Length: 177
Image (cartoon, rainbow, N blue to C red; front, side):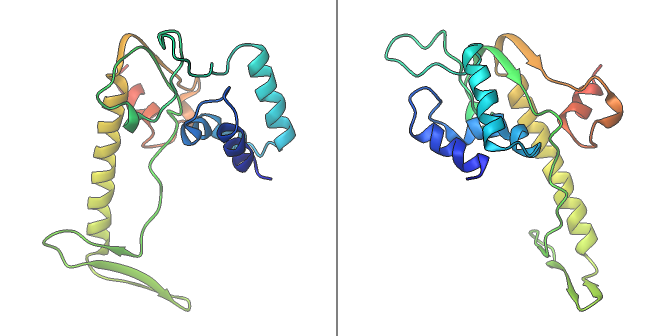
């Protein structure tokens, strides 16, 4: 069983873990990216449980002492006393679709026939427009993330700026220093 499947099973059938399996998976994604085995991941989860790092089950009492784990999109319109923004090394996908469309423009297409790469003349222009729109949306999402905190905002940024990916939130945030 993959770590992803194991985590979804764990989240689905346990009162201890958050019910937002997708958000919990995003929080634990580095475990999967480092190619941990399920047993290694479970050891880490056990350590987090012993150290009190994991989440309390939702109760009918006050939620004021609880931890909420969510995506930035899910946090729109909400405020929290303390916000921890993680995964700031994330960057936009470096993916070029086969077909690009834009209002008032001829569609742009690129494809390959055998070894020959074929691309419509306006493909690069549409690709640049898409990348610009994606960058702007990423910055709007970052703005939402940065404005959710009432009392404190904690950002997780790399110590070594040399390895910071271009276009990542860490690079954007570093430019404000």
